[in-house]
Image (cartoon, rainbow, N blue to C red; front, top):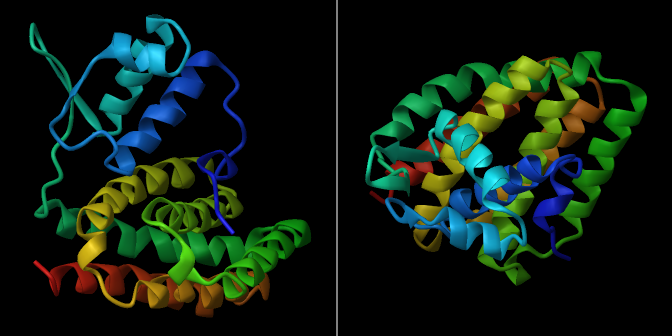
Length: 221
């Protein structure tokens, strides 16, 4: 069972949104390597669209700290600096539990049922059979589903941005991380706690998930 990137969110509404989602995915997954130059014409051709929506997307991605533009030099993917791990984790360890608690305590029955169903799908998926990209898409899908369920668009936007940065670090070291199945397995308990409406448990599991990620990365660097 695989998870395509288009399953993560609602389909983008405009060409600029489509370009933003597609380029963001390539940057997060390191398909566009850190510090690599980004040719907007080549990207536009690969997405079968004009340069204008791609340029609009790149401006948004610069705000997200995924690309950087230099006068007369062009646009580049930002580097992945391991020193950012502490800064990103410092933010996520405060906001991820908040999102999980809000999702558990304020989301409707339909939303919680959807999260419970997602937990079941994960439990019945053999993560050892998934490739690198599908593994990371699972991780992204779970986190973004929880952020959306929290019902606070400002919190959601902030967490998506910082989780994207964390995912780039994750991808950089993914081949050296052992027991990745445990990381994915933690999603099951977290999703079920939210589905059960247990805000305390959801917040605690979210906090442990973030700190466990940082610990796992630091153990191999």
